[in-house]
Image (cartoon, rainbow, N blue to C red; front, side, top):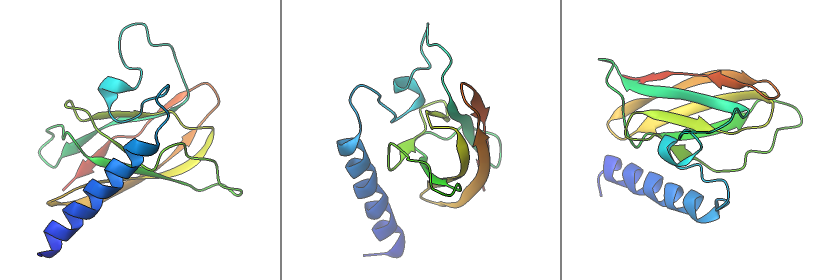
Length: 128
């Protein structure tokens, strides 16, 4: 099995595992499923768009969060993915986070963001 195929299989298994463990009352898989619809009220967390180097939105990008706080903030999901429009919204508790975006065929992109109580923080990422 080629390295890229193994890596793709790993991310697929990880994503399926994350989806199996998620809270059905708070879906976090993609922007379309996590409160961005009409009437969605403000909630704290991180939102953004993942694009390619040429500025096109990327769907199905694997997003992971790591708490940078001590003690570490609880992260409710292993990972989420971007919607068809390249957007994501991840309700996270107040704190500092490192956000990683990866998609097969692209180098990963990382950024840091601070979530404040009752506010959304925007973190857009670009995959080269």
